[in-house]
Length: 191
Length: 163
Image 1 (tube, rainbow over the protein chains, first blue to last red):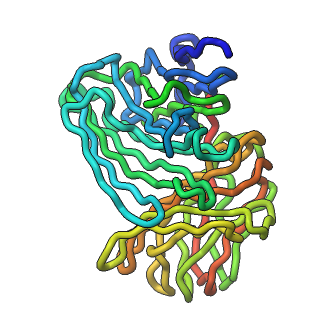
Image 2 (tube, rainbow over the protein chains, first blue to last red; image 1 turned 60 degrees about the vertical axis):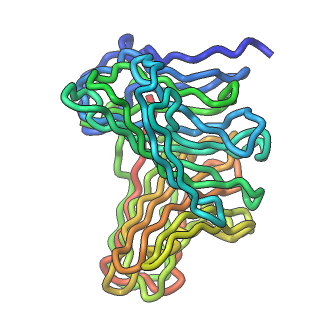
């Protein structure tokens, strides 16, 4: 297996176009063979009001599911927080992280427990990402079902980045070592 | 290449007479994701979804819900369909609003996953992740009501194209 490398979607500066609608595709990463240790969108234009990431994802962690962590502008400090609520088919647990460097963006499937064709999905909204007057907040809806395999979950997540800086890059990293082939992350801008 | 203005309406239907189901067929494969926006009125609660005319036991789901008194989570396995709503069920006068993301619907490598949120103020709220165990591209969507869909029910289908 080839070394697992992070994937950058920096084509944003290479394929500029004049946005004509209210919801534009900015960049997309599809993970190839060998997987990827992370996904990074760079050079995000500040011309939109909100961002949305739509993901089809599968991890390789030896666990029942995979958590995807978000990081903005390469800030690896403890400037993040999150709350989450999820359903696992029988109960409704909740959890939170404060002063964290590894905030949870969304949850997806993993190779350890799910059939090979099962991928998780997530829709992550990043509100007022270019506003320099306030901290940045995100929300997501995500999950996967595995036809009674016992690990299907649906998640609500709320996140906070304690920075007033405009977001110009987003990195998504799995807790495990890789996001698997055929996973796809698409970044959209909302006017 | 980046594509601008990617939130594209594909179909919209507003019922002018009652019906038991609504089908969107000949869905083009040119988008990345589909978004189904629903606002049904129904005589009896739940509605569910099937793809490509598949009525086999190839569907399953996990949900999270809250009704008027409690929150909960449950799931179905090897089902004939995916419920669009679990607690947020519509009535003849109180429409449910729910939005369902059908992710990578034309991908022929992975099974298809749906991600939906439903709201009905007098009944409850829910979120449902559904699985259709097929690698076929989705070319038709059938929405069926347990009861009867009423006049004024609306369904809209949108396509999103990734760059």
